[in-house]
Image (cartoon, rainbow over all chains, first blue to last red; front, top):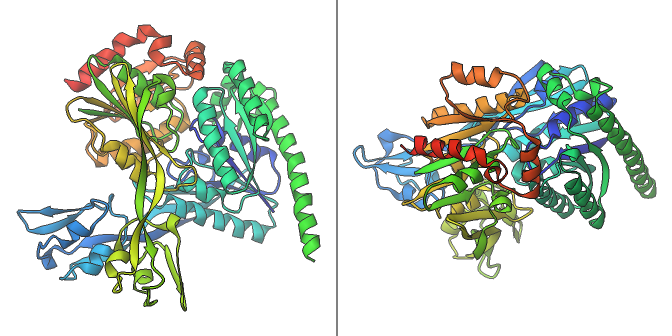
Length: 305
Length: 275
């Protein structure tokens, strides 16, 4: 079983549109949407929910006002500026969005007036789509356990793949390089980074490639909307080659992508569209690289045996 | 006055809007790039970055000579940043949230302050724009401490434009938390609308006034606009798709440099929001 994560650094370069199309092209796979705070993959794949679950992680501190003496010890202890003192009521006030759930306030409260409550921070789902099972989630707004939720749904996807004998886990990643992205990288076999031909696109791509390198992962790149600035696309290709990273393909700017998104279908279904043609080529190129990856892994396995 | 430019979905044009607003401000203005994971504002504003400071958070370092392996630090740590097996104690700095709980419970004073670098804070001028951004260290998972450090630089006496990170989780909430007004930049697509709804819901919970800018307004459908109307959220501006804007952005040019004709509407927008 292989795991591929699609990342970009910069948002809006076309990760989800690409994953939607790869979902159509790949056989026997599980799909995972790891952009848990703004998940969009389900909009392309028309999922039928199989099961829905609550995601609980960490704790939040809660003040029991009746027991609070208003001493203010917790206010001074909190490193996250989550507690303020209501001077009129002489009671501590907790801002749950700032609380990181460290529990230090509860530990030191002389009146035991602070309790820690399990934090219900999102929902996760297993759904069926025409292209295979999709594991996805919605983190509640302002929550901070995105990395944990990502790790969790990836674990669910792996279990599902093991049960069903899936060959591939295809992961739609989050933008940026922070905790949900780091969590989406753990245990993957390769990173496919989608960029666009702009200085920002390259700037952000470089940071994602550095992150993948930091975790010793092999990365491939594709350039979306390349014809919006062919010179920039060419210089990104050169810069990738200089870093020893292969550019698997270029996708042209194609209004069909948006039309398909509006219809809720992967663009690759529209076979003649220029973007679809390019994405098929990228998938073929990726397939060849995947086979070589499989062989390497098999080689290692046989050595161990 | 603080105006945050946010979006929910990434890549809708937050940075072209926020940098352009900064360039259209009548007087001295401050631009804070709070997208610390992937800051891009400097690419088009080209500030002269004269100051640069390392941003760190406090992490524990355990003095093995003093430690009696009582396990109190491990027990208070809710982030699994300290483990103890018999007489071996280990810390995992990248898991630490800097709550200082371990320091406070250690009966032997065996924990001393060490630090983890989370990124760099850089600032300088770009014309009449006072520019600040945070660049998170690659490999660092937590964006919020650096984002808070950027926000601490906010000048109370001038107009502050905040370029917020994408998403709707903690970094987004932290970026908009002190804003007086939030501009949500979106695109007229199902992805744009879906993420706009999530972002708008957060703002409603905070009772933050907000308005929407629809970017690449002619590439998509009418559902974003219909939804805004239905929710009584004003559509402040519609920016049509224009290859010239995309090409200019690709080269690192600001929206108002490529399309100076948009300057009056952006100026009017600032006046309207500040009034």
